[in-house]
Amino acid sequence: MSDCIFCSIVDGDIPSYTVYEDDTVMAFLDANPLARGHTLVIPKAHHERVNDLPADLAADVFAAVHDLTDRVEDAVDAEATTIAVNNGAAAGQEVPHVHAHIVPRDEADGGRP
Ligand code: 5GP
Ligand code: ZN
Image 1 (cartoon, rainbow, N blue to C red):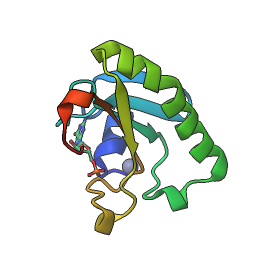
Image 2: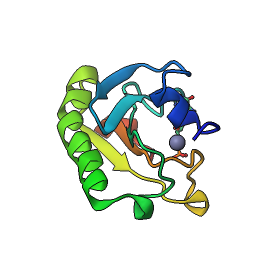
Image 3: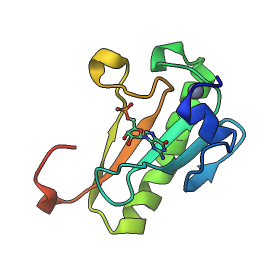
Image 4: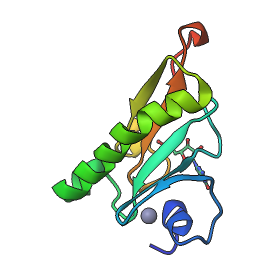
């Protein structure tokens, strides 16, 4: 979709710090991170919500989340991560292209993401 920020990132028209990419999935650092290492995992194809994803693509996205979580924690020496999807505008989804947040957490950070 031409007016979608994340499709523009997939197409290379908007720069991003890419941390993972394969045929169907891409992961890059959030431009406005809640914590150092905050990573977004997206399907390359444009789908607005998790409900819209074909099941095999949903599996690809979550497999990438699975594989990247250790890497994100190790990269910033975090104790844990919050993994979250805002699924629809009323749930706080600002970019209407499915994305999973991987937010590094520590016991000391106190607050909610
Ligand atoms: P949402 O509220 O939709 O779940 O989260 C959207 C996320 O996308 C936000 O954390 C925001 O910082 C991030 N974001 C928005 N525009 C860009 C961009 O152009 N590049 C990157 N890397 N992240 C973006
Ligand atoms: Zn898109």
